[in-house]
Image 1 (tube, rainbow, N blue to C red):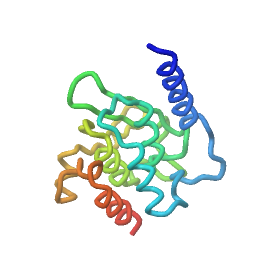
Image 2 (cartoon, rainbow, N blue to C red):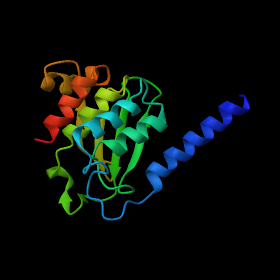
Image 3 (tube, one colour):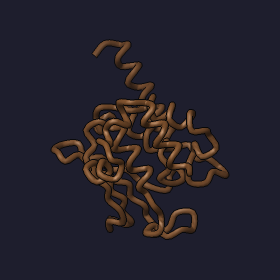
Image 4 (tube, rainbow, N blue to C red):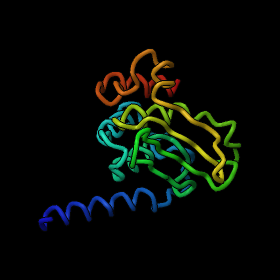
Amino acid sequence: MNRRATRSRAAGLIIAASLVAVPLTGCSVNASAGAGVDAESDALWAHRTPYVGDSNKALALIADTNFGPPRSYSIKLQTVNAPYDLTVTFPTTEVDGKPLDAIDFTPAATKLLGTIGNLDSVTVTSNDTPVFTLTAKQASKTLGFNVKQLGQDKRKLTDYVASDRD
């Protein structure tokens, strides 16, 4: 690997680590909650990736999608064989005082399924007990079009982000 590629990779790892490790004091559930629809869709569009195995982009997308406060969960990427899954695990049964089973993770999971090209499912667990799962097929059925179009058509992504805020 050449020196430029090594530096670029190291910089990417540092950025990814900061996305996970930097506490955001006073934040509620979403780091981009105060941002407008365009700002959120711009961030999602910029971080989209064809592969769930691109951990830097996956971490950035997770931070963009409203799963919970930073450091309140851990991530597991299933990238070896299809179906490819992204699992968000909470060590408790509540987030911001709200029971996990009362939280609708559908919008956040739909955004991930749409912006990560080969992602087949998103699972949320609490202490390794599944709380929520959404597959690309289920999200597509709900949307009325292939969820992957969110990562291919910025207008559709922006429209979905706007509808999530209604």
